[in-house]
Length: 324
Figure 1 (cartoon, rainbow, N blue to C red):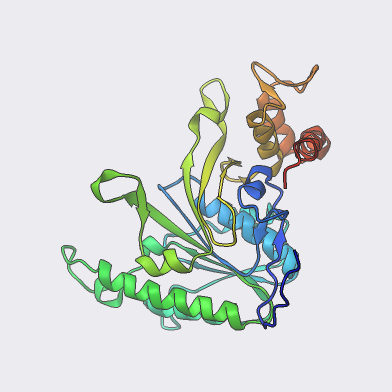
Figure 2: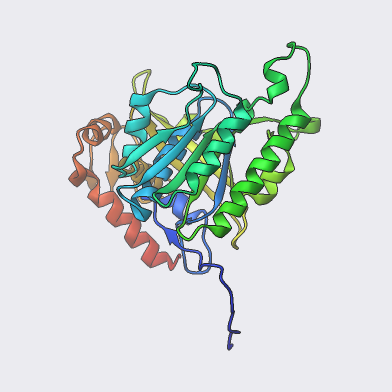
């Protein structure tokens, strides 16, 4: 079939591999896999499951691809561990600069959240800035709420603020000559009537986000040594994928204090695909890779060679299955 010629100023959607096999394959489009550039991604789920950690990692991957010596902008409303931030973003391969939006003004007074969001959008206009993270939408307070009594409700006003913010963000992405990705982290709460989950911020975010991900712990897959959890496994479900295809599910591994671990994630992906067996030891065909705890230690020691067989097995599986 002969396709029409499209005359437009819109850029072609570029995708980049993230190093996380099941994540890249959970958001396919035609024969392309990987994370689309120049989009808004909403990640939501319960507290302390790895939403920020994944956003840090992906922002590092994107920023490294677009501008290795550039800038990632972070607007945090929940508190921040600077050391962990550096580790978690660095796991994505980024060695540039992460700039945070200052929560206080020059006089040392707390700034309004609306003001911080406004500055965040402005920072993304800078040519050197290729990624932005807001953590989190559910913690945003209106100016009236900051000065209110505890019993007063402001969810409707918060939705208005978020709507204006997301629309400005969307307009910026359309106008900026270089790509910029935005990761908006959100809280999950039980939906009306108790069926499923929803997130804060109103409908504008749901409509304008290109990619929407619900995340939950996959505790049964956690890597343990006795009763001690050495690494956590998180499952994601793609709830919205605007650029074609039905979104799938993915998993990724985090080590507390160290961020997303692509090497260990490759092992988990191999297990889920049936390439590797997980018993008292990790085995592929007739070869044993020892205890899972040993692989955790090897990952922390950056012994990349230990994980090459798993990445090669994933490449072989992709080719044999004829998958995208």
